[in-house]
Amino acid sequence: MWQLVVTSPDKEPKLVELKPGKFSIGRASDSDIVIQDVSASRNHADIFLDGPTNTVTLTDLGSTNGTYVNRQRIIGSCHLHPDDLIRIGMIVIHVSHQTGKIRHVSNISGTHHFTRELVLESVEEHSLLMSEIAQKLNTVLNAATAIKEVTRMIKRSMGVDYCEIMLRRELKFLETSDLTDPLAKHALRNKAAEVAPTTMFIPIMINEQVIGLIAMHKSRPDAIPFDRRDLQLAVAISHQAALTIQRMELLDKVRQEEHVRQLLLRFVSPTEAEFVLKDYLTTGQLPALTEQKVTVLFADIEDSTRIAETLGPKHFANILNNFYQEASEIVFRHRGMIKYLGDGILGIFVERDNEMSSEKKAVQAGRELIQNLNRTGSLDVNRRLVFGVSINTGKAMVGYVGTKDRVEFNALGDVVNVAYRMQEYARPYKIIVGPATVAAIADNHRFNRVGALVLRGRESTIQVYEVLL
Image 1: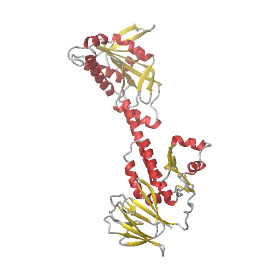
Image 2 (image 1 turned 45 degrees about the vertical axis):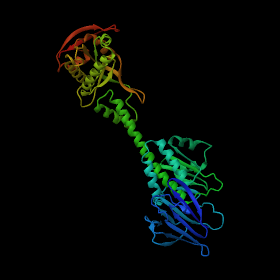
Image 3 (image 1 turned 180 degrees about the vertical axis):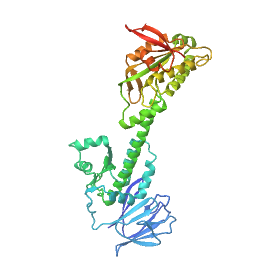
Image 4 (image 1 turned 120 degrees about the horizontal axis):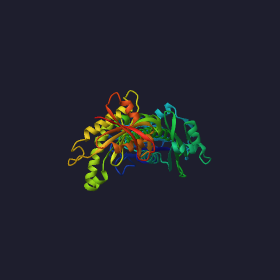
């Protein structure tokens, strides 16, 4: 019995049993085998089965784009043999010959290791279909959609009733569950295709690592058992799926990297963001809170509550926006991090190799803030707003806190609280610093001793100094 299996990218395989006589092939709707492909002519080719001799002949009817048998374009007629492949455009017709009335059980049941030769053979054998699948998958931008598309293609191109693709997160359950089909476990452990007459498990692999598993099953009573071409097609689709998933993972990595970069740029300079991002890409985490020497800088607008009440929220919001923008540019330029505090900012300067000390960076930033903002019109064209800068140095818990969607750089500890309380002595337009800060900048900046002050909320006094502009 001669049979033809007609396969196309968007339809289930169609089985045609040849009977003695002629079968017409073409795009015309009255053809015995309708080829719905733009490369097919209306009357493209004929197949003739000679009953007495049991031979099959294929004749091209002068088609525009040609008829191919085993990758060779035919001119006129040629005899067909079992396992020949006929191609018309994207449509592939597999020729088979079965003895007897019942199709024999597939002889490919068993384990098929993913050798390089098997993958290359499978991709080459189904190169046209793989090209079509690749074009569709290249437009997919997320893994869930890619899996859905691959599943749909497998059902159509292989004529299976059930298909499921499981990725890394489900594979651990498969390996340990007592309910899992033993063939699935064998496919994972052997890194090989496991085939039964109507069941097939195909691993999805990248660099010898199993990243997923394709499970497919034919449940119809008249289902044709899987054959060699089915195995090749499944392996080729698995290979394309691996490339697609790998691309998805790279896209997800790029998206995550950009997401973290945008989070970081809210409070650190672009240079610092790239420095932290490089560490994040290595460890998968942002630096956690650790005790470090740090110099913190506070600057806020005096009497901001009254100003906001007088000017209204929209006008005051514009003032704050100008202040934030100016302060951020200055703090970033001096390699500091920034945190917005309603009517002010907290600048955080840590020690870095091959950079000036955190105290010098903070004081230089504070001087620039005073010089740039201590003029009429710098923040608001109609008034000269009063603010000051306080700086303190000491040990603090420094690092990134938050969730994957919202993260902030912060410094926690007494050194921060002291700097915050020192602000009230920094107005108007002064730079007030603590003893550790002044000791580090004494050789580079002039300063006056303010004296021992008792800060709100503290019992002991602290020596405070003013850095002269």
